Amino acid sequence: MWEALRDGKDLRGPVPESRYFKEGFSDDMGSKGAIETQHGYFLDQDIACFDPSLFSLTEEEARRTDPQQRLLLEVVKECFESAGLIDYRGSNTGCYVGTFSEDWLHSQAKEDQHSGGYIMSGQVDMMLANRVSYENDLRGPSMVIKTGCSASLIAVHEACRALQMNDCTGAVVAGTNLILGPTTTAAMSSEGILSREGSCKTFDSEADGFARGEAVVAIYLRTLDSAVQKRLPIRAVIANTGVNSNGRSQSILQPNTEAQIELMRKVYSDIGLDPARTGMHLHSPLAQNCLFRALLTPKISLC
Image (tube, rainbow, N blue to C red; front, side, top):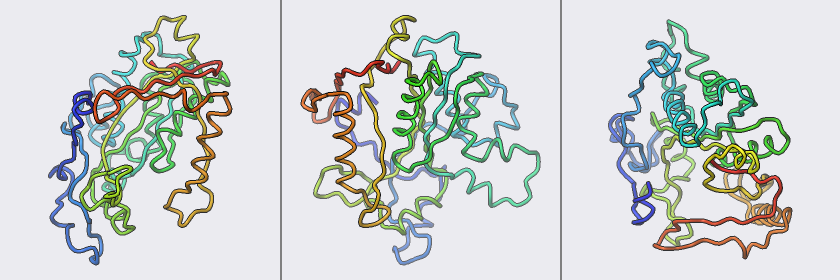
């Protein structure tokens, strides 16, 4: 990922055969269920690969469980290791997971004679956070956030507020999205919101919609004082967060520029921070390092 940022690479690629047969959905947009684009941003690993021996899932349970749950368990494990944590089990650690689609649930719903269980625990996306909390014995707040494209950032906001209110001593914040079937992509195509080229062109006059992508990510948050006290590696400091809604705009799927400007101004003004003090250092066509300075106490550290 660092090489992609450094070199300004575009990691767009065709829909993998392991997801769905893209040619079968490539009719003109007038056809029901047609998908306008045949490209996106996909993980290049086999998402079916999973070693259940690292966790308490049986082989059968792992086979029936949403790949998002399985990959999230592995990524959170790596997150704890990267943060230098060894005493998180049984702790008052929260878990906040932002997610977008329900592709696994859609695919499993086509089978009307399930046997063997693991339906509620393995198929429904509300279990993403609970699975992480259960496997790691995390006893703080545990919730899944579904607010569309903003889900992961809303999860960061909720975790920061929980830390400031002492609802938890630390928090795992994660985001998941896997494109396992054509259902959600077809729905977006029918709404006319996807790029025909399958590529986002932010701030570009050639922008024609957004592209879908896959990711499973996790970060660990803690107040700055406690992170320093425990001598944890600190990668960044979150100065402040805020959240609002578009309210009324041209349509329910279109952003409200005024509302977004109001939110950004409020986030800065609440901590007395001049936007000019937020720097972005450019060493290539893409930003490689963002430096955020703030006056908020307590600050939240990203480990």
